Image 1 (cartoon, one colour):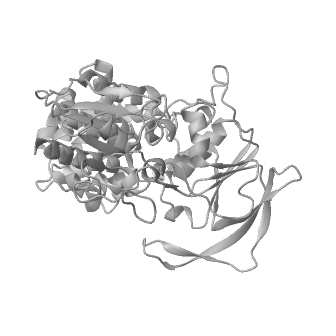
Image 2: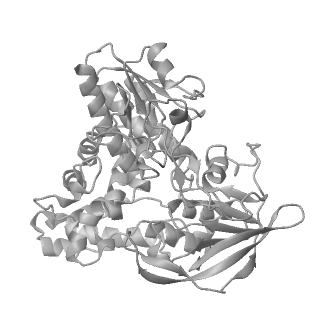
Length: 496
């Protein structure tokens, strides 16, 4: 991906829009597929690599309408089956093409509480856009209709124009629901159960709401004011919010039922337990779990040195271990925190990385180095127990494994050392263990994930769970889908 000036993109979009606007009703499918894909405008790499400003600027009105015109409005609507919350995708895109952005927003709001967030961080290329007929017809999934970008445009338009409408609340039922965790799953359950007329209390361990959207995703990818705006609707709906409340310490699940009288409980505490590699040197000074590193920067604002006293390790040469979106976030944050050199070390190639292509491209543009087909064997320290170097081993790709990616095979006697002073481990997270450890009757699998049935019910009557604590580390939209399923089950349970 090469950088293109946003102004140039807008000029091109205006030219295409002027040509198409008067004849879009008569455009046939083949003609729609010839409309050029609209690139997302972004900040210039050198500028954005030194601050926390949002990298992606967002579509203009003309860009959004042109991109929406690319949708051929398939009768079978295959894109919907790729959306975990069943968003009515062709319907809202049709309204964008017509320029009726309020109608598009109303359609989205029927199924999604967090459109501005999902439009920014969800991997649409592996979900709704994967099924897009346009991308399949052009034999290039990267040319599918930009569903996520259009969703973001509508949500941003609605926020700027202040046209959001609070959902209708049903007659009060007198039933009390406790929602533990304010991540995507917890927010959806809170909204859907409150809509049904239940008394909902949302418990959050931190001093701010949002879960992984707040502490795990950097400001330059998901601004905090957008998280605040989307969450504010819960307060307007009448959801009670309790912060700095650690379920498992402040109260256990059993106490929420027996002492506080909650009729149903939803557990959405996420996957916040860092996973390490189990190699020599991981206890040295200068080694961090990615979620700790990002939490210090995102939630505790370590980058804002003028206003925050959050301690942050000063790095010169950083190694980030892993190839997912968290690794991209950590590497790009390290640059913004002043590192002179940042390296992503991955034992496969960039082509096999699970991170979004867009995030990888942005990291490359900003100056992150990618050390492919390599992995860390040992972390080496100096006399003061600080990281000084890494022992690296090289790999080659073998036959595909169960994921379909080619298996990394270690090359014997290929070890060498590279100088580093900081290591950020971003190879995944496990489920938060606090609730499960303090609730003996709650059944979990060998990974510590809560076991639920198809409806999201746990082994304890009246207790439900969803999101990353069930799935393991997943995506925002998948967690929302789990939350929606659980909320439906909770409402049915309380009705019966």
